[in-house]
Length: 444
Image (tube, rainbow, N blue to C red; front, side, top):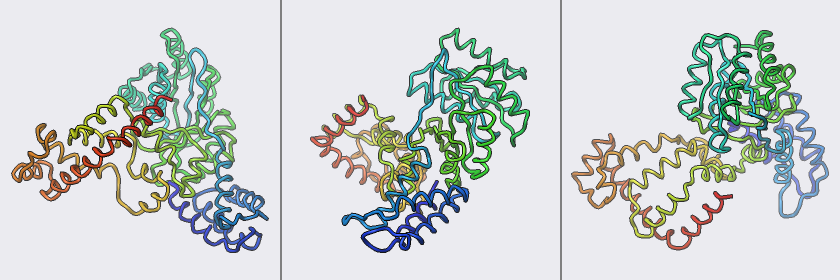
């Protein structure tokens, strides 16, 4: 997401010439290119024009400090305006009441059901809420089964009534059961259509009136661009929802929906979702997204993802093994699994300032680990514990068993030995302090 926009904006800032002040003359070409970049990202003409007008108004006559160039000054102004355009501050969902109720709405195919499962897992694991999912999509044949599968994956109970076609009654009975059984949160997955129609709107409005949710979320496929924005406006006019969820950000999307929706419906984007994994749900932070759009990375989100997977007891165990030079290939394999849980490796790397552009044309994803994993899994427990056992015949067997070559096995073993030496040195002082710091951050 945003790759093309990032490149276009970076190029436009290089056009800004002159020193001392930003004037209408030296900023004109840059603003023209910024407007084009926004239009290419599927931002509406009106929003793109208003955005550039606001940037121009704030940039005109700005004194440029000696330590920075005009392009850097304008980058700061554009960053602030992008953050403002997308909502300034992150906004969480409101969970209150007995139980709290979240109503999920959107078009068919927008990712409502998958999002409902992701939100349930998020609220269960990160907020410690006893959560119930409710299947109120009574028209799509596979919808109830899909929600039940997600419920099994996340360990969340799914309330459903097979053969009943009254979603309002289903929702009411589900809430009664949730109240009786001490659930803190009920998430209601509603039916969608291929397009907005009156029957759908009446049904969702009736459910909302009956259950009086504490939060109504509109889920939209970010790949649909300006269509997503128009659909959001139609739903908001009827439902007056509380926030937007953008799904499929890992697809072929130019980012126009993320940049436009807030300005059109005046409702915050609360979550973004990328990928099929149930953990792939993030709170929407306008400032962090603005950082990424302008190629500044997103180190805070990267650290947060690492903290989510950080196990303090496991870290202590590894630190002791490292200090005694007992770090094994099995430990190495387990660390790879932890990294993979954080998300797509290329997306994670792009959060490091400057890495996004460097990795743009690099074919790298979590499948990059497959060769390493296959080699380690082809080893015996003794070989994983003691790589010095790996003589020529053993390495040949491992290569054949993993579908790799002896050279690849040799390379992995050498890299592992080099890594173990470095980690052993780190385990002495700096590494130990780093582990303590991570533990303190986790406890906050």
